[in-house]
Amino acid sequence: MTLTEEIIKLKREKNAIVLAHNYQRPEIQDIADYVGDSIGLSIKAMEEKEAEIIVFSAVDFMAESATILNPDKKVLLPTLGARCPMAQMLTVDEIKRWKVHYPLVPVVLYVNTLASAKAYCDICCTSANAVEVVNSLDAETVLFGPDHNLAEYVSRKTGKTIIPIPERGFCPTHLLFQPEDVQVLKMKHPDAVVMVHPECSLEMQDIADFIGSTSQMCKYARSNKAKRFIVATERGIIHHLEKENPGKQFIPAYKDAVCPNMKLNTLERLYRALKEEKYLITVPEPVAKRARKALEKMVELRI
Ligand code: 13P
Ligand code: SF4
Image (cartoon, rainbow, N blue to C red; front, side, top):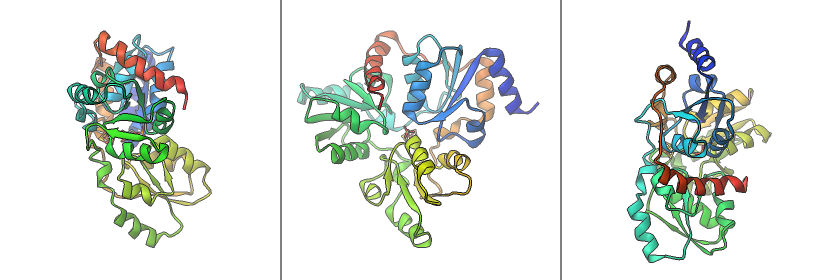
């Protein structure tokens, strides 16, 4: 039996499903029950009724959110070391420091944070709904973290005062995209449509035809008549885009833009995770209770 066949067999035997992020390796996307962005994956995990085990093939904060939103399920992360560096950039102490200066200002946290940080925010957001989440608040000033570029994007779109916490939180993978590279690609392919993730710099956002989360990019590419797209996000998404759009061409805006954390998950590790039921992701209930409120508020907005 191949590894893929073994995984499919184990999924059945153990009543498990695999949820995978758009950045996962192609072979993982291909055996997953659902592939999507942070908000799509959170909703899938939250609404899952049948399965006893959810193997969450992504990074730490996404699996944490799944276990917070659906505490009755066993949520497994195939690789314990798959941690998003941006999520480590905002500590509880830092949030508390900012709150001393702005006691009446709401705190909006990107889901790319640890559960301990989420426990200290008013509402969470993803790159798919950050603008709508901030607009839903009856406040003209918002503390927003940890991604500085997403904070700038939200500030431009809402016209509100967005205070980034920490001052310059960032994604090391999206930092790799530079407008010069896109300009070179555009000279070669003038018909190409440019899709940019809001974790990219403002200079990259300025040259985008479309800015959105990974699944919003997939939706945009499906509905757009263009035949060629330049894609400024982690290159794992190219597999998803190609699978859904035969006949269209997807060009990475920077071919080395890989998230090493996401890529720690391999078929072998996923197989071991299922077989040995590891690594079980847990969040202490007092923290989970507070973080759940912030996550559920976001999900309830259904945007
Ligand atoms: P999406 O929610 O757009 O999939 O983004 C998650 C992420 O980690 C981007 O780097
Ligand atoms: Fe974190 Fe960036 Fe990787 Fe997304 S691409 S998981 S933000 S390091």
